[in-house]
Length: 258
Image (cartoon, rainbow, N blue to C red):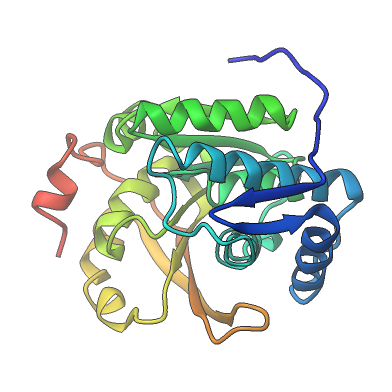
């Protein structure tokens, strides 16, 4: 869906719940943390992140988008966390963000690097409406939304993407059934996880074998200036996924591959 472009009007400060952050302070904090993961942004992109935060916190008053509402926390736990996987994305890649929610990691990645083509998939139409508002207001390019259960989307988009990614959606063996069917042989799934993943890894062996994937590497990172540990699991698609996967909506969670 295409939207009429309009100029971005960026407020000098944003206030919510008694908390205040001017754009100058926001820019300084965002740039400092991005530099620590080797990312530099032009002013216009910083302004887009600022407007994104404004929209996120404003819409969060109406619908449940995030439990994180303090500006410093939004920067670190949403924007920086999402940007940690930017290095895996290259020109003209087709990238799908599964269970994107409020747009993480897809929208921060698009703002940072918009030379790939992004699809954001979510099952809740209210969230899709929010994402469309963000895309329109920020004048984002090469990004679209799809309102769908991921199992249904997967059935209609088998092996069409270079990268399928997801952040904090499901346990790994379930998540693999959502992601691997979408990826071309040779492509990757990026599974963004918290600090405790040992049991999830152990329980994913059968799903990997059945769905045609192999864990290529696990990258443990600590978010800048914090003690927050994240794990990025990179799964390489090495074989075609059998046609029966993904199964019908609800089945991956009711009867996970284990």
